[in-house]
Image 1 (cartoon, rainbow over the protein chains, first blue to last red):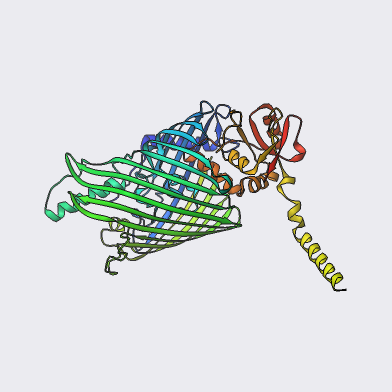
Image 2 (cartoon, chains in turn red, purple):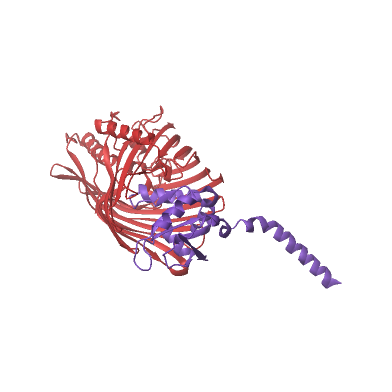
Length: 402
Length: 149
């Protein structure tokens, strides 16, 4: 079911270039190419994951080392206001576009003034607190972010878009300041992204059900538009931060000239709160996704989902953080258990404990274990023989960045 | 008699309090580091919030419109203190912030130097620059700016 793709030549080249860069002596972790006006940075991560009772994101019950990310970025500050930059990314992950080098972000950025700047190109989409750094393991507390909001199967698709954003910072007198972003454009779905594969799977099921012979070879998933906004509030109260993000998008899947399915996210709204006090940090986010899904022009879903989590972290020393996560997702906001608790596809409840150790400024090690009740969010796809209600998964990961 | 006892008790409580908070008060950021700009810069005082926005690269130009060049001083004796006092976050949180800016594609992190001497030399040569150093590292090439809370 899951082909083990071998890295392409490009990927190998990228890997070797990264290794070369890692061996270079660096002061700030950066490689300054032209008096600090041009900088080269990058990262390399390798992990191991294993699940019990169910597969998670691929064939994970036997354990897998398919948890590799390599990224290199370059930035050039051409004038005080104008910057260009880009990051290429190679991933070898279960369920996400693999074995390819792709542009993670690619921007031309003009900063008119502190309250107003524009970026054009492939820009990261803000969604909650962590969506923009999902490829950079060392920037987040957990290896696997709360899946209720940061669904790993959409990671490669809903992270950036071709288009642009307006951004800036607004000072709110004694209350603090706000960073804002307004973005719009189109998402590019890779042929081997899970979003595309899910459309293929649906057509295959339709073939079986109605004894049809529709070929999925040429199935194409397209995004018609995506736009949204984000407000990040940095309170004057020390340690308190909040955010509100909105995403709207419209997708179609086509088989030649036939539209086989469509998905319209009418609104994906995430409200977030983060508070740090002494050695403790508390983060919580709430999300509602109002969506309408059609298959062969028949509406199969037209209702919001609901998700939330809370994450409590404690750092006995600055380099070490222990976190406890509780995360809930319900496919239907207004009918959590869809009338029958015997069917465990409508929900997913995840209790996790994690450990993060920053060995140096450049090296980070992480370990975590999740126990899950429920099989929402693609467990059925990864476990075609039937998914167990109670299951577990864990991972170890080592990251280097410069 | 009662008044004397109250005074003595009050004095004892005050002495205990001073003893308890003394070491922490002695280690305030004001003693650990000073903000410095180029000696030709007109700036003499700065609000803490403005300093925070400048070092987070959210405020990028001086009042005269010229670009601000931020320098991070990684001298371990003052880095933590600066981060807690001016940015109101731990040095680890500040490091993550700078990396977020970079790896999200939102900007280039500021120049980072390792020692007070390197920082003083850089700020002394670049008119639009700002950084922080140990008080005893200040020379005529740079000017100390007071932080208003």
